[in-house]
Image (cartoon, rainbow, N blue to C red):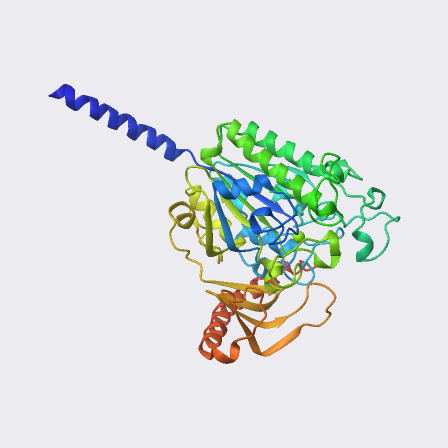
Length: 471
Ligand code: MG
């Protein structure tokens, strides 16, 4: 009798001990961010001539989002949104003087912003970053360095790869699209130390990838957070000899296919090191494609416009979640999700609470990712810079003003606002406001509710960002 009982009891005790151990092991979190990759630029998002077998496999083994948003139309605010879980207007990183940080900008992510790696560090995570930062220039102000914002280690470029032209570089955008290594003087840093300037950008994706693999191997026994922010396919485009001239899509395709190779390397490293079942990986892009670069810019697929605009093409981007055994394989998720949500979702996976002293706009998507629960997110606010331009709620999108990403100095102000049904009209071609007065009123209310929360914070922001009074 007792023997029969003892065995199952021992087994139960053993299992309980095992699951307690497994539960104690916090999952690793990796965010891979492409720069200016459009909604239509991957095989699994329908591109006909760019081959992305590794990202396609990641999607097949994980969850691919049809309605994932970057929350900003350009690089800097988008990265602030990712790392803080807050609309970038709250941190000031969307404001005109910071909308895109330049190589001589004095501003940076404010020290009082709490970043995802800062929170994860506080609960035992090792944190590292590889790639483009774009939230401060530390040669101007050391307080803008990633290691002052929660990252334990860093290798990468401080900003975009077109921001340090040599005197040989032609002026103006069209010239920027041509690949000539002599025109670019990009600085590569390890931690705060300058490694190379100019940097051989043809090697950049490979150098980043090897660094990310080293980080993963070095910290495989501790929970880690890795933020891998690629330099490409931002213009000027470069690819290594292994990829140059190999894609049917030209140099842009070469750069994307090398980036795809890099993602394959990262996932393969996780598999080889036995970490795949304990690592949440999310792949996305910081904003839509840079359409004015013509053939050197990407594609937003059937979405309207691109980078710099709050039409869908500027902000709806690829979003792929991967965690074998935890996230169901092969799911195309049509729920609304955005860059803001990675902050609370990662904290939830790490078993820690949201900060209670500030507004966090992101929503915890862990139940949606792990259990197929409905999305808690129904709406999204669009800003162009610090100016609120549109709102989406369910399938409806309301524009207060619209503007092309580049080449349109003044916005088109819409009074009455434009309304699009993104289910029937994802390309935003047919204004249906006249037929849906109640929907328009509801979305205007959504905007007002959001504005009330920003007004309160804006005054604090001004106080924080004003230079200290001189004695
Ligand atoms: Mg970008």
